[in-house]
Image (cartoon, rainbow, N blue to C red; front, top):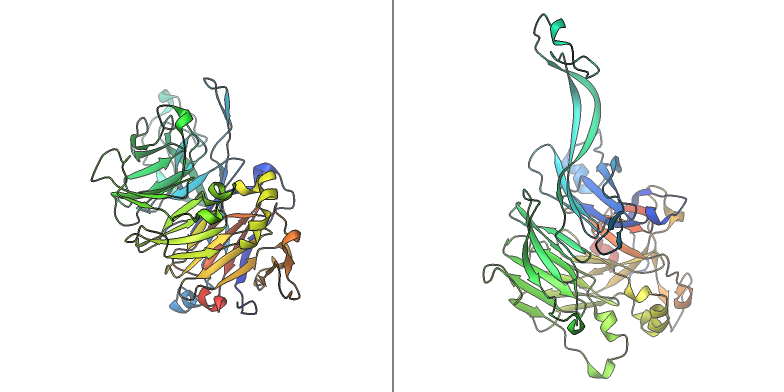
Length: 453
């Protein structure tokens, strides 16, 4: 594997010296153009980064090199606060589980953010002018005495310093009994879905007091419960199709044209289990933690604990591609179960052309796989190489055989440094990696395929 190949370069990093639980990043998401990048953390905060365009060029050459500016903080706001469910005597964390951008319709941007129970729609807009010359208010905004008004004037707009305003536009609450794990905006631009452990609801973006339940797998007797919903996503082009994954490692493709309540799936994607390799941990490691449609809509990318898999919508008998992310951990499952790492939920993403996939691992490692060759590379997000333009080095985990210089032994891996959340720019070779409380933005000067030879 091309451990000596040229690696992506660090575009920018956002590092915090003091780690607190509230600072841990819990979700990362580019908007549709890639000019904005939003992160959410366990403290309920959303930080939006904006890509700065170079003064030299709006030219195509800049786009070709992929060096058209860095990402800087654009806005920070508190999205969710801790809450308490008095009926169930249950604390509701402020942690942001997911962020999803809406397609841009005008100068303003809109995004959805959710914690375990409540989904909010936020409007992000800029203001560089302010009105002056009110008839009924003075310059400080206080109402004037009407008896003192002797003439009328026309208010005017005066230039002012640029301000970024973030305002809540909708609050979608009381739709879920269990913890929300997914939200996905529909291609129709009018609806979105939200999924918890047992149900999936569809919302209209303009209606907050009710939603439509489209999937309900809750059994009449909870003792009969055998699986839970782990992730759900709408098809990128067909507004009637969506997919959801389960803790049993299955995927269900649903078509809302066939039935309003999609308890009966259109297609079931499942990999047959080898009875000879079954163990106590088989069901745990087969649970799907993330599912993503390819940009073309033809394939599905899933991540379970040990592997990443690509599924063809036209072939439901099994995955068409399987990539071993950290197979060397199979012998460590017992200790990983004891320290709860086996329940970590890793995300996975596609590049813009659906030719390369990426997912996370431990020890601040993340993996990229070239779908054409099947080859992969292990990269490391680490503070020592956090200087801008530094080359991101490849790494290799030693688990037997000939040991090379610089290899990391399996027993030396740091399982507290885990790459769970990531995002890929929608059109360029730019990736955002969340490593605990640090955000790394990597930019490749060449196609990622060249790193995987």
